[in-house]
Image (cartoon, rainbow, N blue to C red; front, side, top):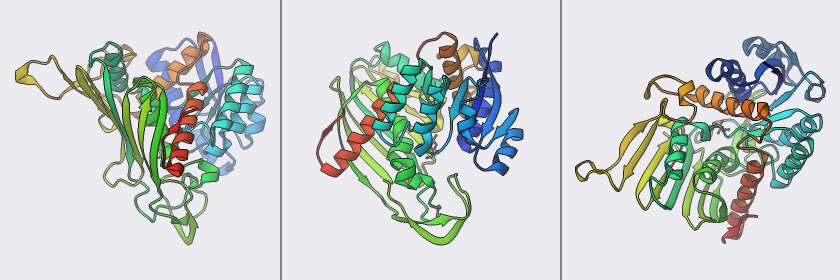
Length: 383
Ligand code: SOE
């Protein structure tokens, strides 16, 4: 069996998550190609030396440019802040490497289009790390929708609520800086629920939105800081991105929906979810209970009518490879390893991965339309 050599760029939360998934994916899923944790890259030498040992890489490096041009590297995994995604992905594609890129794809849809063009020209396999869509229960929801179990879709009610930035003393990381992040809650977490909405309901036609920054200034971090919480200095800096975006959506197939995102909702730690109402039932998913799907069907018996919970397990896509009994529970790394299995199979079978840079560009266009609508206070069509 062929083994691909991977370079992971970035040692933060996502560098770690991808490294763990790459370590477990061969054991859980037996993909048709292997993956070797060859080199990990970060400009901070102390951090990358530590990560090399902790995450199990053969080598470390501090210059991504050298690494993406190495002939022995097959796959580049981009886990850096958003402003460097385009440059790294384009260089990696030009050098013929397959690319797994963290979300949101880029700072603008124009940058996303350049990444897509480079990937297409090079004929590489490209995937965007919208990991939540791979949650087994969410995949079950997708299957039920496709089977017509809830009839014709009437409405989609989506949300992604977090609370790590609700505290004004949370330091000003790159996630609060437009030049580095592109947008705030909208791109960071809104992109995930937009991805799920496109998967479950279909393409967006037009949006109308309000956006707001609740906390316009934050303390600057003490030292290098990439995380969600951390030490703050006594100097302050300006937040120039949104803390919330509330959007009404008109899908191309006529369905109406709403999407609310914020990182300032105390009590909601990582609550990505949705409810879909159809002519024959309702499906509800909430990532904080990621093994569960709440369903209510019009043909349920009258004496047991209302929501009930079904559990993901061997019955869901890829479930036979995971744990033997429904309700045993899947978690964050199971989902991340499903993402890796999909990517490796796409490479092995020489076919497009999903979701890929085409999806990423369309999500960036939706983000552009949401931002335009928040300015114009009108409905904006999605390009
Ligand atoms: C921060 O809001 C964040 O780390 C996102 O960037 C991730 O995409 C999400 O998985 C968890 O929260």
